[in-house]
Length: 346
Image (tube, rainbow, N blue to C red):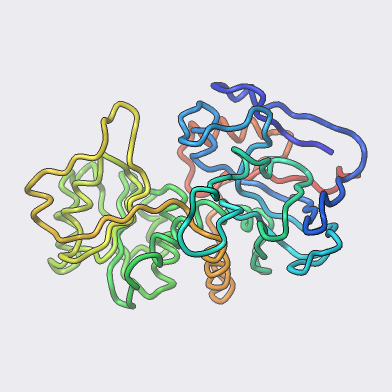
């Protein structure tokens, strides 16, 4: 059995492949399932874990990556939620089933629990979620972090109504999922980017309007103009401290701002001028992925609408460290995925 392990921090070479030999693992308890992982994907948090800037310290030697999908190949004697052959993924917070998160539910795969950059993962059945049948393994592996985060941003506050407006920032995976989900919910989408090519790709994905934030530094005003002076009903704020003020200016009077990032290198934190603060009565709501129930709700929507995540590139399992490097340096449009070849399994 092959897997990668985070043996040292600060450098991608610290992600070390191991081959334990032997056959696949067996369930470790009556409610455990064994998953033959078919694909795994990278998120920004994986880079933060590697350089030790993630809020939750990683366990040395842990198997990296929270995101992955695969096929159930063995089940414990008391398992009732899954059967051999089911297509599943692991929830980002395996112990957070529904409602509000509690302090005892912060464990995460690829950080404090072994993650998905492995040929086989052993999970408790309560940690797993069925993935939509129409998705490829690579697409299914893109869902747990960025997908659920975007879904929570759009559905975790006051309900969005068809015809309302959503603002997304940039072309990171969460922003791309947010464009897709907002259109799925019947909303009008305004997106920001600084690239003409990416502007075209955002429109192809469903964005109704795109604002170049470099040519238009006061893009909050531009968003208001594009929404008939009303502002965005929801802002999916993925930019961090540098963009929050403009997001407030872009917001409708009683808009919602789903805030994902609160810090950035060299920045003390979020600062909003009095003028921006006085321009809106918007509610700022923190979002940090979501519960297993939100993951399941999202998957039902994805399946009902035949939605497909945006994949930028796929690397073979043997090139996992290359995938990390390219993810860190190339600004991909969509998810960077690692395919795990089932033909090499015992």
